[in-house]
Amino acid sequence: MFLPVPLCGARAPVYHRPMISEHDAGSLIPPEEFPALSGKRLDALCRLAETIEVNGGDRGAPIRHMCALLGDRWTKLILLVLNAAAPLRYSELQRLIWRLGKDERPISQRMLTLRLRSLERDGLVDRNVQCVMPPHVEYSLSPLGQRLNAQSDRLINWIAEHREEFIAARRELPED
Amino acid sequence: MFLPVPLCGARAPVYHRPMISEHDAGSLIPPEEFPALSGKRLDALCRLAETIEVNGGDRGAPIRHMCALLGDRWTKLILLVLNAAAPLRYSELQRLIWRLGKDERPISQRMLTLRLRSLERDGLVDRNVQCVMPPHVEYSLSPLGQRLNAQSDRLINWIAEHREEFIAARRELPED
DNA sequence: CGGCATCCAGTCTGATACTG
DNA sequence: CAGTATCAGACTGGATGCCG
Image (cartoon, rainbow over the protein chains, first blue to last red):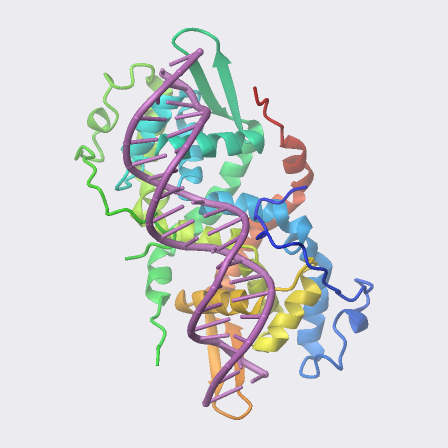
């Protein structure tokens, strides 16, 4: 299974979601249950229902997983550095992240290892071990990793261009 | 501060990252510390260093935050449903997520509330309360939320189109 | 109807020390 | 050099019960 966003334990209670034909709007969104929805809004929901598999549910897991990579504190930075200068050794990677990352703290060995292993399992990063003493290990981006990196840059650059808007849009909620 | 990716507690130890001119490649990536880097790779790293602020460090926080939203189990689904049929009441939203999400379990009240509050604080979702009895609360996307939604769809659709590749790229790591 | 308060298991992350 | 092992604090997310 592909479950990157871990479900919280619990002894898997059984939920009874009504089994419905996915292309039958009437049973997917029964009018009696959603009396307020009609016309354009109902149409839009039915169109969403046909494409939602890419975003919701288990089939959406790969998508959430890849997006979560970008939201992670270190992963996108690792991908960027590798993209710029791969192949890199473990310690080169660690020092470059420290130099380029503009973070107030370095990445811990533990985190770097965890993230690299995860990326390797996902097939986005290649690990090349030369069995010598002292050990020599090189990391680089796989072709798929390069392509994901390039695609995600487009969204990231868009967000970066609108950074001030995002910061300005933040509000304090009244707490009364 | 804008710290969506929470730093793990700890009493903020002080790290001494060397203060360097960001446009001085020699001091940013001192050759004696990275003897293996030269030529194209060094150039690429220096170019990365100039744009990294959008991705790394504190200034990258808004970006990671927005990406993390997409990686979250529920948030993108909430945005999609709101985009299709806003304004929606709390319970309509909850039921639509259950109907459309193809998840094996419904979103819990706690999570729906937390996610909506977070989106509201980020200025991506608007909350409209009518003080009547019983309460009537409507949620909708803010203009910024609509734009982020549209932009993120591009990345998400790209990942979805290559879903099989991502699944195929996954590997088991040898464990010895 | 639209929440909030509480509890609790599971997970994430960093610090530190040790190793082939 | 390139990690592994262990520990502990903080955070996540679901279940449940209560409230105006």
